[in-house]
Image (cartoon, rainbow, N blue to C red):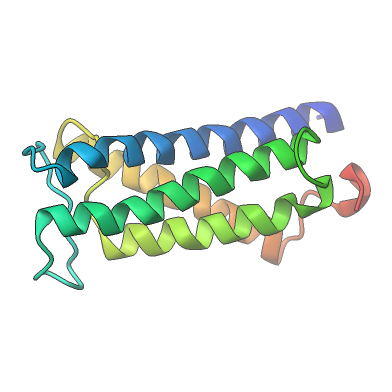
Length: 148
């Protein structure tokens, strides 16, 4: 696979991952405002949180993740910030996303039903794990391929 194809795929995955988190974030204000979603956000770690408070707290995780993944994608593509910084943005965003998924496990905001919520959650975790493995363990893509 050519370096340009790899660059396109990585940028697309990071950008789409950011958009998915952004979509989750955008679904939370309705819940924070008091409307009853199909799957209310709740935390297994802090079950005493009201649905409104849980939605507000979850919103911070999804908003920060969304911004971070989009910034990582644009940085990797060379459209925003130094291209060498994309790895840090991607890893930090994956940490925030994973923490949010763990804290609010089983609920992907905006999913129309539990089955799709679980699928969305698993996909998000798989992408986050792929980011951890490729960037922190395998150190791929190599720095030489896309500059330092």
